[in-house]
Amino acid sequence: MLNEIFIQTEDQRAILETVRQFVDNEVRPRAAELDAQKDPEDGFSWEIIEAAHAIGIRTMTLSEKYGGLGTDSLTTSMVVEELAKGDLGISVVMAQTLKLAQIMEKALNEDQKSRVLPAFAEDPRGCLAIGITEPDNASNYFLPYPSSFRTTAEKTEGGWIVNGMKHFISNGNRSSFYLLFVQTKKGVGLSEGSTCFLLERGREGFSIGRVHDKMGERLANNAELVFQDCFIPDENVVGEVHKGFQTLSEFFPQSNAYAGASVLGVAEACYSKAEEWAKIRVQGGKPLIEHDGIRAQLAEMRMLIDASRSYIHRACYLADNQDQGWDKTLGALPKAMASQAAWKIATWTLEIHGGHGYMKEFGVAKLLRDAACFLHSDGVNRTLFLKAANFMYDVPDYNNN
Ligand SMILES: Cc1cc2nc3c(=O)[nH]c(=O)nc-3n(C[C@H](O)[C@H](O)[C@H](O)COP(=O)(O)OP(=O)(O)OC[C@H]3O[C@@H](n4cnc5c(N)ncnc54)[C@H](O)[C@@H]3O)c2cc1C
Image 1 (cartoon, protein in one colour):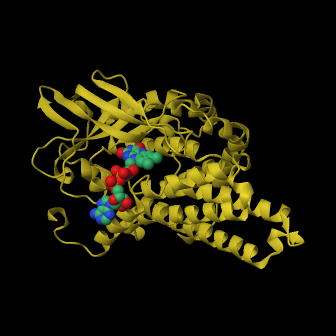
Image 2 (cartoon, protein in one colour; image 1 turned 120 degrees about the horizontal axis):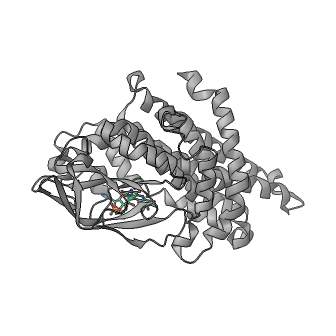
Image 3 (cartoon, protein in one colour; image 1 turned 90 degrees about the horizontal axis):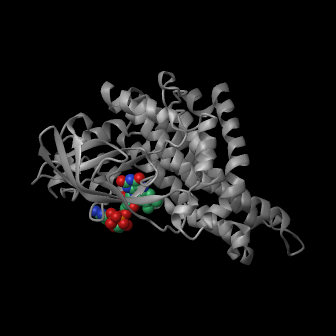
């Protein structure tokens, strides 16, 4: 286990070198301009997605049977982190797609896989999304509280009629396939009465609502998913009816760590900028880095980055090897740690740049806006601490609170 986590394999090094070149050639040169677009939809670039497809990044979590590399969760988290050093939004577009491809290959039945995975693998623009959050249900489903999803499905012959809406959905307006969580049983909480459905783009009654105008992470789009009498057939139920939450807890163990890896990449981009500036900016007759306080702060940044990465890698390794010591807090806390670290590091980077950091041209402002994203995305941190605490202390009748 130690080797797996702490020493990169030849394959991992080769994959990361490819990703580094992709970031240098395709992402970094475009990121600032795309980030500055006024219309949130214009921050998204199909060219970047197609370039990621061309070198195999987009599909790398699929098994070789479907044309992927079958990368494990540890390797995938390294890729997600590397992408985020270039831009957080690109990392998230890819992380969602890589994660859901990995999950779909495990959670879908053979018929569903044959309908989805080859089509996804062949489409150079294939992106994936997951719709859970609603205006009234966010922390509710992370904990979960005994509320019900407002997006509901009524049984009809051969399938379900879905009505309602989801919001904040990453890749919501860009995806070809979705996993969608819907209340299928009235009068019970969402953990007992919701179902996970496979949803295809273009299904009648399903449309895209608003594309959210976000403060950061602007190279990724987030959107509302709107359902008006949308028929979804029985063949699209993933797992068992009314057991959507079992699907969520069984197949998503590494999701939180991938989110942590994305924001960790932003922390590293901040650190590099702070270090670079500290070397060239002279005050008090010497570069900032020769002032003890600044140098010590760089070491503290390094510590926060290294510790967050170790936590993420441990969670990823154990998510794939649960018999070796997986515990459920690893599905909630690594992202909270990495995002707190990134937020601290981003604000320190701003301080080290002084007034220059406040000027947009230096690029610190973008990193600060990006670093804020994961204080809330993939679960608000406080909510995740509470979720972990409920696992730790085995709160007995939590669902009846
Ligand atoms: C950029 C971005 C991308 C996202 N992508 C997706 C996606 O692809 N798919 C998807 O389904 N969702 C997605 N989400 C939703 C995300 O996972 C969060 O659930 C959501 O952002 C929480 O927002 P909220 O305002 O509804 O928070 P709320 O749940 O309303 O929380 C508000 C505050 O109340 C606190 N709080 C809530 N309950 C308690 C409690 N019991 N005790 C103490 N404090 C509490 C929270 O910690 C928080 O501080 C995304 C969100 C963002 C911002």
